[in-house]
Amino acid sequence: MADLLWDDVSCFFDPDLMGSLPDVRVPDASAEDWQSVLDLVVERGWECQYSEGATVLPVPRAEVVLARSADAKCADLRVWPTADVLAIFRFHADDEIDFDVNVRELQGQERLDGFCGFLGGIGRRLGKPVLMDPEGDSGHPVLGFDVEADQVVLLAEPMVR
Image (cartoon, rainbow, N blue to C red; front, side, top):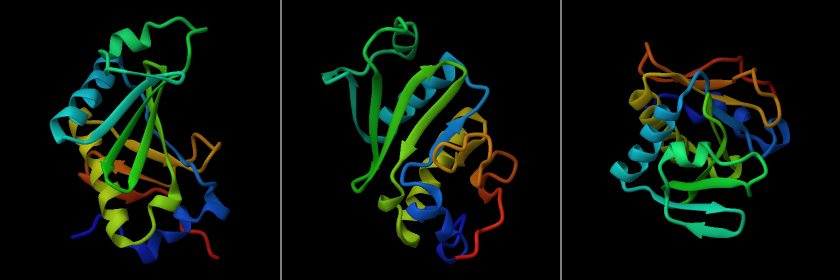
């Protein structure tokens, strides 16, 4: 059974209401949690690409990326949990795992199910919530993986269109 039904949550995937790149995050994280996510990407066989600025490099250990100087080129990890969905992880801090997804890639029940599976995979691995906030509105999650419920749940009332 699906964690969420598209008809109930489609407003949260409307770029005009949410922005096209909602913020997804795991609060209260650690360098070990970051490494667990990197390990999960490998274990699941998700296609990925790590880069620093425009230079593509092999995926390093999390502590190496997180120890880079503040003036170093931006590091990101692009992960495709499915062929048509891209998550871009940013290594801004070790205490919060954050990534962006493009809501235009998350239209319909099938893609929503894949996205929920991705959030659930990360949340189960870490034993922590994975929260999605509207673009630029961190701290006001609309949905996320709930550890106790062991599924992705609504955290805000759907908006009326």
